[in-house]
Image (cartoon, rainbow, N blue to C red; front, side):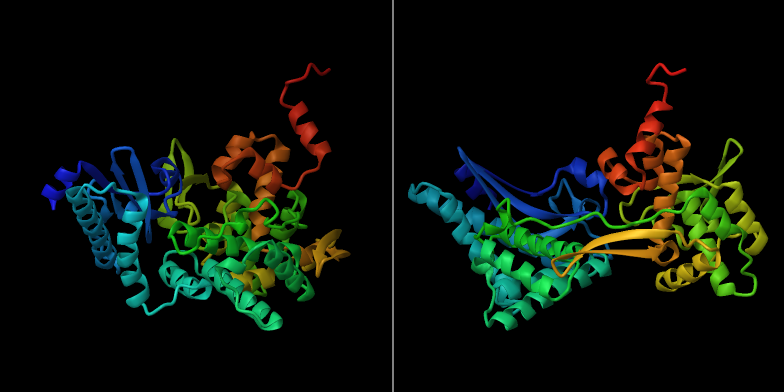
Length: 431
């Protein structure tokens, strides 16, 4: 085969679609494998229809690494080999006949390969629903289980939409009319606007992937009005005083409540997501210049952060867990317990909740304790540290936020508090 390519004077390589820099910044992210073929002025790209993380991709060999955990490694690499051979044969044949090589020639020879691998082998008809099933199958075990569940929920809702309107949605049907009708269907189903936005976002994910893989040729979903709907949610944080109320609550008679409360407090003091602060491990503790830290590898991003172990954390560990961290607990149980615990601590300030549900704006007033959940810990850390004057980049170092815009949207402060924080920085000639 090398002789054929030499005659054709072309170059072929496989590479990940996303930049190396972006993949290094997000180690868990998977990127689409792309075939690149250059011949003279011709620049041709084609999806290999598989996604892989940078850690599992051999940059020099341009193949999936030989790792035990990658169950379909041989399948993917064989597919890449078949694509390479198909291109080389086609280029050699056309070159020998003196026929100008076009993208159409190259695409045609690869369609046979990709169809064989992904349609005949899996017995899947790649209409919209067939593609979704193929997409879910490839994502299984590679993304969070909750994300996959969300994807499947979106597909089920579109199936319900089809049943309601006596249609069968395919790629060519997903246009602005579909978008408006689907949103109306979800509003009639009493869905919140952020829930609707989540399903539109999932749908766009399916369509982007199908387009990249050459399965979908319709781009209606890229229209500026085909957008993900969202509104700011009523997410609360606990003040330092309220955290103290929780801390001082005597829960020795209810070990379940005590454990849930203590796990939550670990989040308030470290600024981590519940997936990281629930189940901290003592062997990850180390000392640096007399200060104790715990090294945490953040599950969502893969980034490592060293969080100082505060006096409050140390007290909880020594007082109730023999110097260890609170044991890991089911998140659903923690969430359920927290509302009852916060009510016991009299965290009952009235909070205004505004949301759009079923296409209508609703305003309710609820007790603050009813809104508390595991996610409140990280937001409390970020907001309280900001109010204390800690620099934003320092807070983001622990919380994992990537941009100032993302951070400011996350914390719960008003414009007055933001102005006060900036004024205290010494940028103005005051007093």
